[in-house]
Amino acid sequence: MTSYNKKIVRTSSYIEIWEYEKPIFSKGKSILDTDTKSKEKSQRRTFDELTPEEQEPRLERMKKTRLEAKWNLLRLVDCNYNDNTSFLTLTTKENISD
Image (cartoon, rainbow, N blue to C red):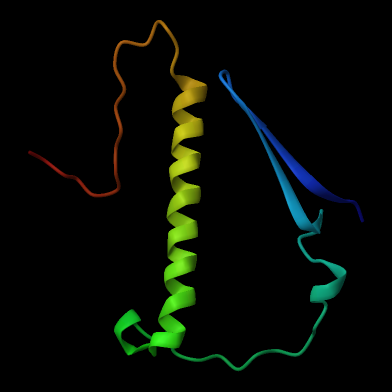
């Protein structure tokens, strides 16, 4: 089983180097996460149903997820946009018309 702790993303204008605290294994599981006990499944609660202590980490996860999505979009644009490109079209799942 191979592992790594760095990720390099190259685009036309910059290079990103990500260093992870824990190694990432090729099969998707680390040795530390080998707990075989199954957790009890529960109904997912809405944000309003959470206590303030539970809302804070969820807000942090949402913030992190949105930031990662932003960087993914910026990488996509940077890889596909060049000096000869005259326009850029972004589409969403929903059909939004003006």
